[in-house]
Length: 337
Image (tube, rainbow, N blue to C red; front, side):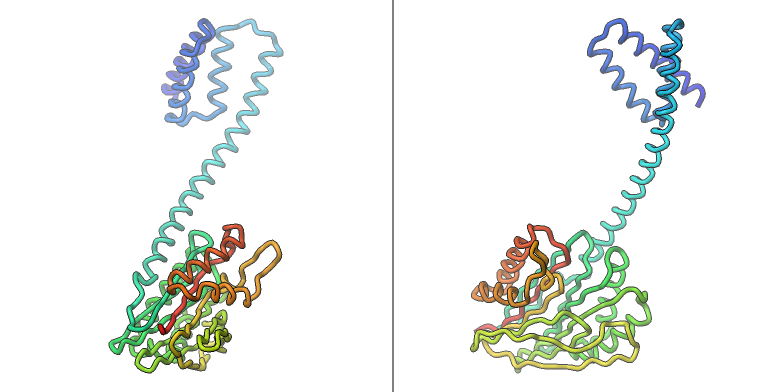
């Protein structure tokens, strides 16, 4: 280390002498190149100041006492700066490490979401899920059985970051482990509730609505666990009803039971499932009303389901100044006319 410092000391002296004699751009260029070597050799800012002081004292041995004292003052300043700079570098390295972990978790989250929507004759489905940040607390799931029935879930994990991603993975694999019950909403939520109660921290909660659509009779069966109520659109009456299902959030009580509801879906009717990031959209004037959501949906109801959800998202994002404050998930399942 001493040899390295001595070498840097000699190089700095030569560069400084050259610049003081010629005072040109070439000398400044050499100084810039030297700064790169300083970084490579991990020489601190105060050590660079020491190099400068030693070179100046050698070149100008009869400097005024005040000038010498000023250099000592500068050295003390740079020592404080050096300590703060190294602390900043350490924090930045930790931040980069955390960001890398978040990126991995965000990528992992994407693998939990369906790659495609199951095709069902006479059924038009649109889905859009947009996180407010890299990590999302929203989750949705589709599964189709051998009879053509479709099971679908929408959930909101009250918590963010890596814990939410891990919780999401648990939900997915727990749901996949109940194939015989996946299209029975009440039974599925009861089993999932036991898994969550045993494995999720007490400060994390999961709301969910799970539904099953049977295209043979066009019935929609559903149960809820404290999730944001959706909407049911009646095509014949051009009206919206609230699609709510009473039930406590998952993981609160081990023995919770969940009521099952059903709707007869007529041609043109559609089901709207959503997360609270849709209904709790905040503008400068406060939260928007649920009626405003249904008015937006009505405005675009003539479009295919996927275009419908995308247009609703765009308008709500626009109302918020294109700055989402919460995760957004919207699902529409429509029986075609």
